Length: 443
Ligand code: ZN
Image (cartoon, rainbow, N blue to C red; front, side, top):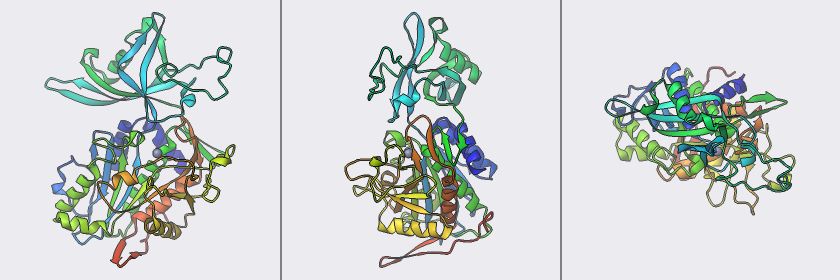
């Protein structure tokens, strides 16, 4: 049931723009109110709100009942995935065929994008009488296929292929006579005149629906929509509890993690800092008062982790192997690509213990660099105890990834307990976690 909802969520979120649109719909249905950034002065106590930035990042929160609240309990996940961005002059015509001009967005496994139907989603700007209107758009019918070169012409194709994105990864979209097809389809989908479409942020995505099978789930964009969905579910479930702790729960969805987060809406931006400041000012708390709250605050940076590959167990660190359906992964890296340290991992391990959720510890082999994620980057803007966690998966950055069917529920349960807990920094290296309150839906 939970994975079914996850797979529906993934299908509704082909790009970060649709992820924000769809997440906002879910929040609205649960009674959360949309506010524009910079307009947080009118917050009512004990209510739920959300703000968005660039239409591709979103932060939801519930307001405290007074300035005496303990701190912020924050989750962060990302809503972008590696894919191909369609260039502004999109069509390439060679007299016979029409192809799309694309470039890589993030670091994908190129082979997994070939020989499968691809669709288009993103946003466009449309001319209005006095300016522009930003319009999310999805063209869910097949828009292109990136064809492989036949084995007969490339006998080395199975021996460590390399892919030049400017040559090998251009999708076939139609015949030469189809010139103008993309803009025609966009105009039709948006019900506007073609001439009024000004500019685009469009991406290719894999429209194949996800599936659950034999203890696993496979779907596009599990990194990181599995964590986005699980943290959203936990945030909403904890908010329904009859006794809610006096903290400020904050759910963050950041764009641009796959390209380094250094954008106005990414985890490196001021978005989280500005939102927390707005909440504090609304309840009459000064900047110094807000800084005081951060010591009793906590962030869980949620981004999927590498499960041991059954065909390639040699890539694991022998003592830090993590497995699908083995529970939530706490990620460590000495060079602080992951923020987890003894304090943050210890506190989160306790929360998982209270939730009855198994945990696994991950570190890269010491001779492999591995990836990075949101936690350390977000901490440069808002500094607080942060743990990097994720769910174990295979084929990260493939166009169709695989994870454990049990793990989604593990993360929902762990984060529901997290959002129902108060953290207290007692000083002198002492921290206390309040017992979680009764949450609806649990025993
Ligand atoms: Zn990720």
